[in-house]
Length: 78
Image 1: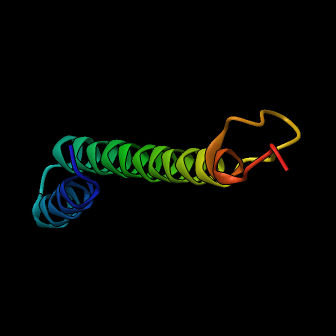
Image 2 (image 1 turned 180 degrees about the vertical axis):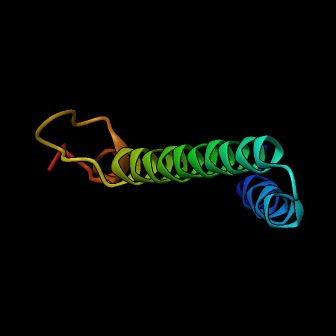
């Protein structure tokens, strides 16, 4: 699922909470909004982790693994 969907659902639940006249419905909607926000936060962290892992793989430290990332492009037979 996309980050934008999580954010939209959180906003929708907040609007529903504000519109509700029943306390239990308002509380349920507020809990749902918090849950959607938590999912959005997890999604953002996962995206950042994936982006960092991809960058690390590309630009890896050649001393750790000479065949990794850009280090593999350097000729070692000179």
